[in-house]
Amino acid sequence: MAKADSKKLLSCDTDKTDRNDSCIIVSACKLLLDEKTEDDGISLNSCGITSNYSFSSSSLTSTDDNDITESPTSSSTSVIKSSHVNNFDRTDLWWIHGNGYDLKDFVHNHPGGIEAILLGKGRDCTALVESYHPFSEDRVWKLLEKYYCYTRYHNDDEEEEEQEEKKSTAQKVVTTTTTTIDTMIETCHKQQEQQRLDRGRGRVPDFFYEILKKRVVNVLKSKGIDAIHDRGASQTRIAYYLMVFILWSYSGYLHCSASLWGSFAFAITGWLMGALGHDAGHFAASRWAVVNEYGVWAMSFICNPIMWQQQHTYGHHSFTNEFDRDPDLHHFEVLVRVHRKFGYETKYRFQSNFLYVLFAYLFVVFGTCFWIPWGVLSEGTLYGIVDWNDKDRPTKFYGMLLHLISYFGIVIVLPILMHESMAKAALAIYLHVATLGITFALFSQINHLNEPSLESDMDSRQRQLIPGKESKNQDPRLIHSWAASQIETSNNFASRSMFWHVVSNGLNHQIEHHLFPGLNHGHLHHIAPIVRQTCEEYGVEYKSYDTWSDLMNATLEWFDKLSVVDSNGNESDDAVLAVPDNKKSIKIA
Image (cartoon, rainbow, N blue to C red; front, side, top):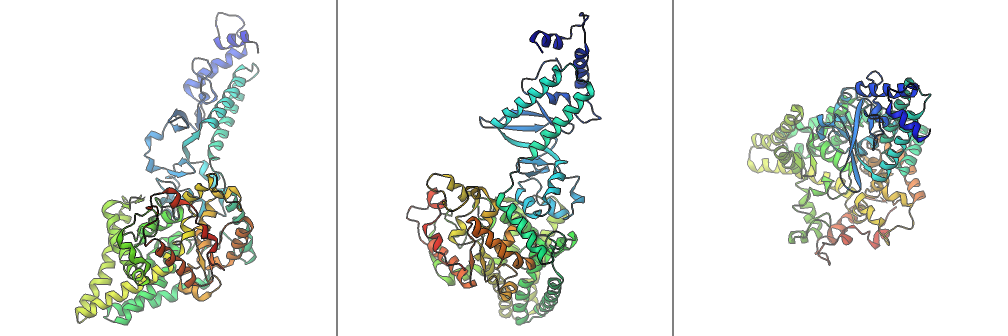
């Protein structure tokens, strides 16, 4: 259309006799803009049409029936805010790939249960969503679109291109004289739908993880296991749970009856009972949510079960070995230095001695069951790294308090009341706390605490983007791969041994567990070979040690290295993040 015609169309001068259909359309646009078409759930304002009949200088976007406005926050980013987002606190939304989703109306319909979905509320739960829905992602992302309401960040370049495209679309719509109101409404509706989908595409699939998922599904299928419907415990594993529960209950009775052997057995069976607690804590004991929600309490003598899901299921598994985000790195700071970023203190010189490390491990379960939960109750946060996001729920607050009191009463008070002397009571307490603490530590601390594992977290991987630090043997896309990071920060040991599988509660397949935490530990040995094969194919370091002692030695070597002052004063980021030259010399199967 000519320029003069465009002006005539936009002015809609009522004195002119050539008031044509185009003018009627634009007038109708004003009416629709003022009143909005609530039935269709759209606003023509989102198509670049403003109330004074002129093109918007910066097109607005919308999602469903909520207008979106944009305001720059810096030279490189801009924030997209929903008109109703001010009604929400940040903690009211679930943050996935930078997008905010209001899932409160879906909480009670979540197939995995209320506790599982509330674990991600108010924080970045991207890793939770990705790793716990690896085999049903299409359905998950379609469902999430219904609850989208907020996008935190867009790149300026992408935003400008999007604006130009919308403006061009708006010009075509308004200046087309043959366009009817219904067609314009339909066009705007389609445009809004596309915009909404575009925002959902903030998710960039992890190419390596996608390959693993497809191969794992095929392997499980070949074993007669449906990756979705059979992901929980098999009948054999359920029978194992029941057998251990009976032994644990009987040994608990002996412990309460002033038997020293009972206290020792109560510790051993308490550890084995942790297999159910660990599986349930990852929503993998059963597809029935109620089984998982109560089953996690089976680990009550290993760790406070409510804190466990905040600390371990969310914090550790989402941000494995990231110093500022993984709370598991901070448990032993008082006695043991496990990361270079902890400043050196003279007390750490003793950790080169294995007996000193064992001494530190004596206090593990007392810390995870009593001391650390007490700090979380009083401060509402775990080391200032993971906030207790559901502390305002009475069942959680009083549940943590009840566990703390019950643990102290059963483990400490009862022996004092039941034994004939304080000496025997002290020995009973020591036997339980020390045995369970050392057992827990020896099988859990070795899984991530060695030099190559601590240099492979997502933060450290970004250092490979610096010229001269790139890996020549890896696909460059692996630098950003969460799945590759989970593999390289974890370690397997004795992966073909049924004995070590039982004794370690399945922790000898730590790599597969971190990739697919929602898959019961009883299934992990099936998928280990294909995971390893895929890692070899793509150059991802898969560390599987022949024996438990080999992996334990790797951890002790790392502790020994950190027992002395770094030659550079441990202040250099390069020293902290660079991948060591001897990484490839680690003995693996």
